[in-house]
Image (cartoon, rainbow, N blue to C red; front, side, top):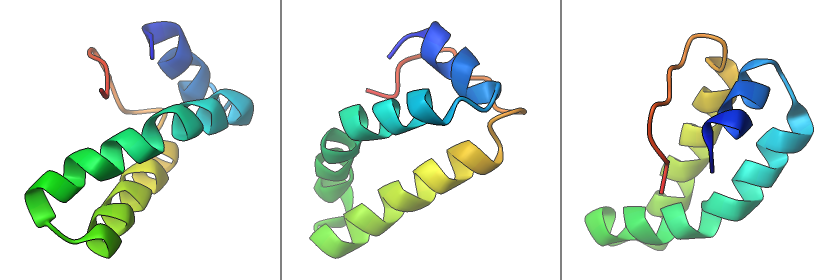
Length: 67
């Protein structure tokens, strides 16, 4: 995902947010699983991450890829 995507999310673009979620969710769940070794917990953590991303979208500065 590029900076343009995150700028659109900061502006409240729900379609871009949904696209980013769809593109990264499975990858991030697998990555989280490497640390927590529990599928349910890893999915919950990533869901929380995306909820917080949306809630704090106007104040978050993302300067790197989430991947």
